[in-house]
Length: 314
Image (cartoon, rainbow, N blue to C red; front, side, top):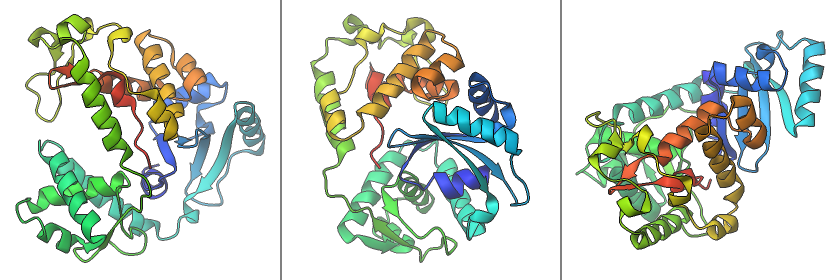
């Protein structure tokens, strides 16, 4: 599963999210009256389509004909595509796998740095000016950034689709060329962020708005690398959560994904079952839990709220 997720899914800009956690996939299969071995991956695309994948190492292995027929029929009834994949299909998978492992290591090594977001923005700005730079050239333009921290920032840019590189034919090195992503439209995330800041500035004081900012409302204090979040017993009503402008999300084709995430969060908060969350949103309960926790993060003494659910445009 790790090979397929890193080589096929992480770098695919059409993939919105995927679930590879065994018990989460099992829950989804069980909710659809299928045996747990029916699928290994659940993938959601930015178009809103969903696929179930069963993955084998060799072509000699496959799903039993009877089970595959049953899975295909059930998937079609839900508007889902069922696929059987084999590792043999992936050309140069060893190189792809090694490259994504290196990028993951760089990200993990810098996760607890408070400056990684600033480094990302600074290196992204340099790359946008030049359009094509090697790793060494890009890092050399910002000697004030520690090289290890810079590598972590570049890895994040590649993971999030904000930069491009050949990760399929050659192992990453200092001479690997980085390229910008051609964009014919403005930075959607920046526009949404600016809109969020302006709207938050108009909100009443956090305590009055139900968006708590007292020390007693926070949890996970003193844990490095983790942002403070609203304590579970002090979560305000959904009506008071900050929420982005739906019209902008609609214009950028992000509204469908945002609304599915919002519904999943609200169902999770109401302690609905994994089956119910999946049937309404095609989002696993584990994924809904992650989204819920992101909504509770406190920044500048305010809870982020539904702004945490804005999908990254790809």
